[in-house]
Structures are given as structure tokens and as C-alpha cells.
Image 1: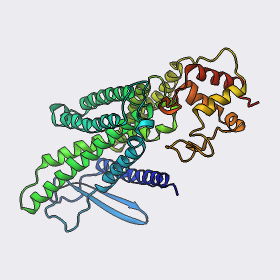
Image 2: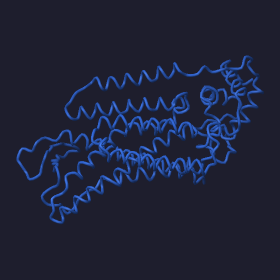
Image 3: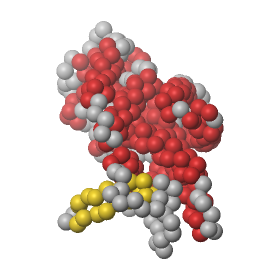
Image 4: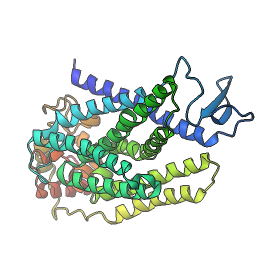
Length: 393
């Protein structure tokens, strides 16, 4: 039994489930806050209420601006959704990119790092991202949501640029997502929940709860809400080498991050009763523009002037590809062919020629970290053969 593969599947599934629960609660409470109406009857401390119907039942929700007059015996804390998402994400990052740093994180063509050095740098970015963000929140900058958003976007963009200059492309993207996920989880663990616990303790002690604690928690919660869509984009980016392995990949990720923020902002405004369809249309148009500009800035792929015969191509593929992409891989990091792509027969190579062109010729993202030392000339020969029809004969 391949325990590593099953562990990967189980942790990835858990990460997805927990992430859905966390993001779902974030979206719901942002929606709820914007739909609360002044109470029909004045009640101590109630700032808004809402009647709703769901699953055959009616619900009456009330929000206390600071705290209720008396603390209920049972109080639900929304925290484990965040904690579980981060823990499972950290396990995945460790399993794939830290234990497999030599293959999935180090790119010697960028920086010749030892695996342990790459791991330390990766952890440093995760911790450093939180420290910088937290200091920004506690400064005067944190009091201005719009200005904070601009500065934080530029900070993340700079970190993305730096990571793509140090790590293998996909490893860099995953660390940008890891930074944002760590910040979001730390907001819950170090700010939101502790502040709420302080308010509960103040109430139980017969004191008036400090309203500033709730305000600080709300600040972090709003930040988390706006970072959700960019994080989700990074989670699925591993399926799109046109993004993570492309020329100016850091710029495309930053641009699509802005698209995600714009779409989230539209729905937050809509939930508050402020209809600005131009924000949504602008975000969608920006997505299209990014795709067009991305395609127009791709470096021209250089191909060999003479189309090589299949036996030459077979030697190139056997040397650089089938250690992973075979019915029985021999590479220590892959017990099964990634994504089921097997290239150990001529028929299979012809079938997957389009994918091979994108990964090995156009983006040069395969072999990972160019572990086998595939030369530009070999890539040009492989590309010429594929463009000529990829005939295995």
C-alpha cells in the first residue's frame, strides 16, 4: 500500500473540506452583518436583527453591538474551521514541498539551494508575512481600509516576485498562498478569538466589555474576507502551467488577485444594498484583459529547424520524462504517473503531445527544477517534432 499517496489524498481532502467551511462562514457573516435591520423593539444592546427561513425552519438572528446583558451558558466559537484549514495546509506544504524540496521547491537555474536552505526560506516567508502584516494593522495605516488594501497588495506582489526568483514556479505560488493562509489563520488564532475571550471575561467579571476589542477583530475579519478568492485561485493554480510557469508569472498572479478582490468587493457592496454592477463587470473584463495581455507577451518558442525522427525524440523523452511519466515510475517522488500521463509508448506520447509541448517546450516547467538537465536544444527538437504532427513512427 502506498501510504504517502493515501496520506496526500486524505490531507488534501481535509484541507478542501475545512476551507469550504471556513470561507463559507466568512461569506455568511459578512452577508449577515450587511442585512441586519434596526430591531422592531428596542432591546438592551441589540444593534440589528434579521428573520430568515432555511431548511423548513424560521430563524431569528440578533446582533449585540458590544455584548448581551448576560452571557449565555453555551456560546459557539467559529475557530476550528480556520485552524483545521491551516493545519491541513501546513501538512500538505510539508509533505509535498518540504520533504520533496529537492524536486518541488529548489530550482537550481534560479538559486542553487540545498533542500534545508529552501525549507528555511519558505518558513521564513510564512512567518515574516504575518509579522509585516500584523505591524501594518497595528499602525495608523490599518485604520484606513482602502489605503491599507493598496499597500498590502503591493507588499504581497513584492513577496510574490521575490519567491518566483528563488523557488521553482509552483513552489513559489504555493508559498504565496501559504503566506496568505497563515495570516488569515493567525488573525483568528491571535487576534479575533483572544479579543472575543477577553470580552467574555470582562462580562463575567461584571465589567463593561471593551468595544475596541470587537472593532479590532472586525478589522481582521474583513481582511480575511477579501483574501479568500486570491487564496482559492492559488489553490487551483497547480492545474494551469500557463499561469504558474509562464513569463511574468508573478505579475499575472497579482493581476488575477486584483480580479478576485474586485469580485469579492462587488458582493460585499451588494450585500450592503449598494448595487455597483460596474465593479463586477470591471473585474470580469480585467480577467479577459489579463488573458489577452498574457498571451501577447509570451516569448516566442524557438524550434529546431530540422524535424528530428521519432527515435531521437524517444531518446529525449526516455532520458527526461519517463522516470515519472510511465506505467511504473522509477522516480522516488512519484509512485504513479502524475495526472495519469504516461509517455513510455509512442502512442501515449502522441496522445499527450500537446501537454508535453506546454510543459517541456513552451514554459520549460518540466522536468521539475530541470532535475535531469534537459537542454534548450533538446526542447527545440521535441517542440519541432510535436509541431510537425507528433508521429511516433
